[in-house]
Image (cartoon, rainbow, N blue to C red; front, side):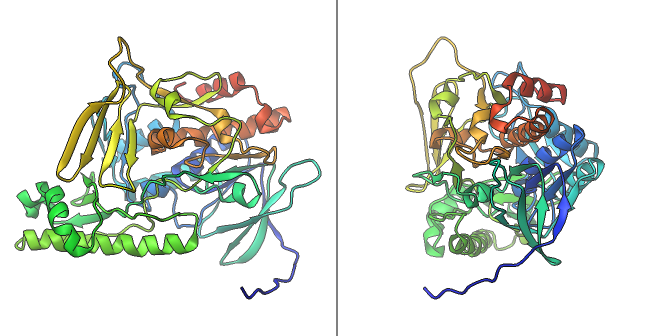
Length: 450
């Protein structure tokens, strides 16, 4: 491979803060807001043009329930609930029953973009959109990261901070620091969503989408898939998630490029199938996502890996910082459809033309109604003492990841990282040495439902 030498140069410090958050998904933004509400000076860096990540740029406009599976205890609150209430006041939200297993809330992703701007403005964050994290500065003699290098239209510069939160989704900061990371042996496939107008004009064809994809998909070079969709509150459009992009690692540039193009190709193929089946419909493609809906890429290695047994048994932890009730949801690479595993011991396999209900364990007198995520899973093993991650790159096995990866769960890891960052500053301790009881108390004080 031919190489070139990039000359070294001095970079200007473009901003200094207490806390620097890399990644502006809801997870990253919620980390920044919680830290700012506790008095920290916070800067947030996002490569796209808005906050929200999968909820906005990928068009996945649903969040799951904030309640346990029996509906008698609220297990998620904080900024997720605050944003839900704000969208509701805008008429941009639809609520389902507390125990709905698939969709707790549907929202308008475009309204969410603006609401998140407002949340950031109120918190007085320093925001860098269209800005790419490039590299970390060298670790100093105290074992701390002093700065990160970023690049945008103004050029390349350094951001200096005292604590860094990696909310990139792919553990970009942790990986480039040399922290140990790994890929699951089964990376869940990605999905390109799309929004359509004229969905109602499809008539009965819309209800036969699964059958049409199974029977006509091969002629359009579509892989076996699983389809679901949701009306967009406050709009005359329908969001469809029916593509399946297999075999890509989103942390690799070539894979990600291929995945984006393939996802859009599949959207058009699905639209063609629907138009062939309903030639008199007025189906029209209204919008494509700015990014694929990614389920998984790199994970960090931490001092504790959350396991599927931890999740499915509802194991408690002294350092719990997030809770969830969404089922284990495995999107398969090696066969069509998905497998859903529930806390009550039941299991479903769902694919176009196939549905099997069974049990993954025998019946028991009682069942857990939610699960917990420990703080330890956010701390990169042997990483700098002032770096923490938030989001889907936490340390989990494939079964645990299939449940905890959804947004209402990951949002809480962002809030925990933001609060932990401030506590580390206030106490002068490394992030790994924080008292978990103090962290949990501070989260609860700020509105979390732990």
